[in-house]
Each structure stands twice: as C-alpha cells, then as structure tokens.
Image 1 (cartoon, rainbow, N blue to C red):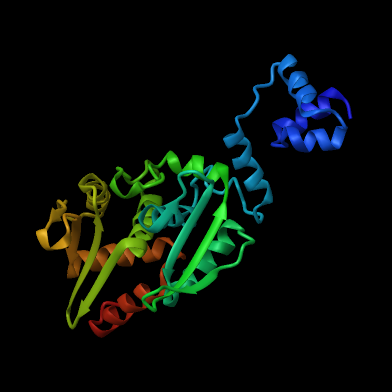
Image 2 (cartoon, helix red, strand yellow):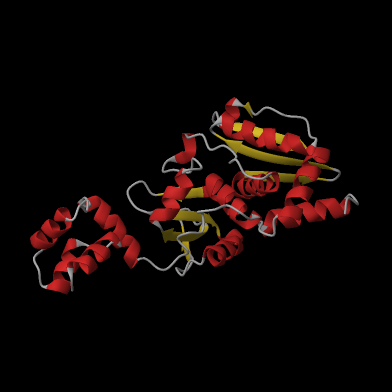
Length: 267
C-alpha cells in the first residue's frame, strides 16, 4: 500500500490502528507520514465517533443535505418536536408510544435506515417503540435547523423553505408534539414548546393561509411551557392544507381529523 492510499483511507475515516494492521507499519510511523503530508490528525474522540458510525447499520447519510420535498420537511419537523440527539455520539433517536409505531416504519423506510425498530416496556408498564440510527452528517445537518442535543430549551424556528415545505414541517411538528381535540362541531389544533419564539415562528407561517396571527400563551398549570392554539374554522383550514401537501402523517391524528370533518360535513 503506497502513501497516497494510506492518506486516502485515513481521510475516509480509517483509524491509525486499522491502518497499522493493514500495512504492518506502526501507528507512530503512519501518524508521521500523515503529518508530513499536511493531514490533520483526529483526536481520539473524533476517531471514536467515525468508528462508531462505520460499525453502525447503513443509512442514507445525505438525506438532510437538501430539504427539497414535503416528506423531508415533515421528518425535520417531527424530529424538531419529538427527536433526541445524543450529545457525545452521532445517534439520533425517536421514541413513541407503541400505538404510533407505524410512523416509525415510514421514517425508517424514507431515510433508508437498516436498523430495526425496538419495542420495549417501561417500568410503569407503557409500551414504547424506538427508532435510532447513527450519522455524523445527519447530526451536523440537523444542527443547522437548531435541532441539537438537549434541544428542549433551544430556539428551533420554522426553517427558511418554500411555503408548502414550511407547512409540511409544521405538520411534522404537530404530529410530534401537538394535539387535536374533536368535540361534536368544535375542534382544536394545538402545539406546545418551552420556547415561545418557536411557536411564534409557526404562527407567522400559518398567517400566510389568511388566518389571523396568534401569539403563544403560557399557563401556570402547564409547567411554564407555551401553547399555540387554533379553534374549529382555523384548525380545519390548517389541517386540510397540511394533509393535502404531505403524504407523511401520524395516522391516529389524521383519522381523528377525517372523522371529525365527515361528521361535520366538511369533506
């Protein structure tokens, strides 16, 4: 193996130790070769992250490089609301009640994640379904949209995308952290966040549908998180438009909306 091949393999993520085994050169000699050719040596933590990703199940690592269709925008919004980004690893995880595991299957297929969905039971007897995968590039791309480790108290605004993709993002956020209440001829669309500006950015986009801008509110009984609510007419317009745009959605909430709309002869 020549010097150029060694350099190329290192730049692709191979460790000093693995290159040493391949070449029968000491890790020290390989390190000197790389440094002499202007290659920056990775820290142990950086190498561990790359090695973990290499061992992980395959995934489409470029999926979030360009948000150019409603499915991508929906998944981005869903992760913004209900995803978990590891602080010291490249892992992204979505955990839901088992009754909603159907949407995890759709996300898994869309991002081409080979890893299976894990079904577990909590100490309190709740059935949980979990989808997790490892991707350094996904973690970096999600960071551009404010989706970071410990994101609960970070601002995550609706991204600058074409209007219909913004609505798909909002639908994903609603499916991840929203609520639809149906009651005879009344219904309510609601999303919540610990950051008021997150909901204000959603309200600004919704106002482009001809719906009056509404501010988020906080109630002491809700542990100081903020809520954005639209009732009946506005709620119907929001959901009807969002479901027309994006083929991805949480089936449980979609069915609830469809049943309400049929009962009230809206569709």
